[in-house]
Length: 197
Image (cartoon, rainbow, N blue to C red; front, side, top):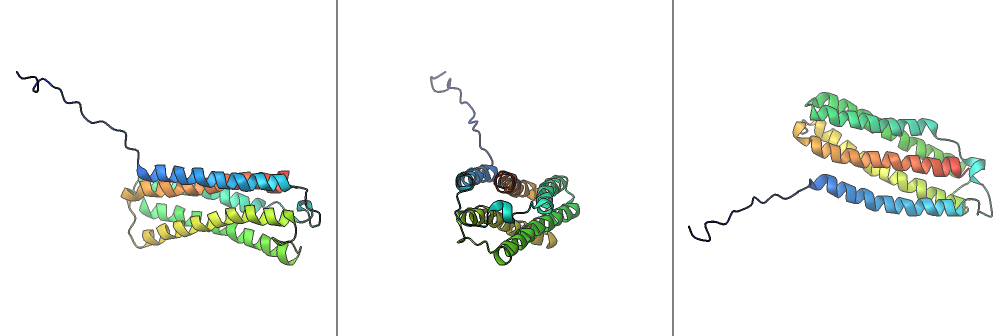
């Protein structure tokens, strides 16, 4: 027996994580850093506006909108579970409900801005509060909009019959982003509408 034939070849076992979740975790990490900067800026400037209006004068708790957004985390979670079980029609209904709840939240945000701008005369240029408020809440609204566009794309593909059980992992990755948007809103809600008032 030669020396070469006695060499045992070990199998090449490597850990290869799925690219989708890893990429989404990286995106969420980067977005968390951006939101952290905006939250810190908002907290730093609370009460430092020299002119009105102040948060306590104009902000109302967006309870209904918050309930809708948080409920959408549940509906998207259920949707992914349904798709994993191969129940595509039920998945589509739960996904549609997620889109509706997210849209209600976004419309409520736009109505709040309309009231603040036209009734209370609070714009991004009014004072420090206006600048930091619209920057932070606007950043979140932008992320909700991006999420809704992605959800609508999946819904359109589902209606065309192009989504099946084999796409459950991709739907789960998108749901990670949506859960992130919801968690960020909890932080924004507490900072802006509870602490900031």
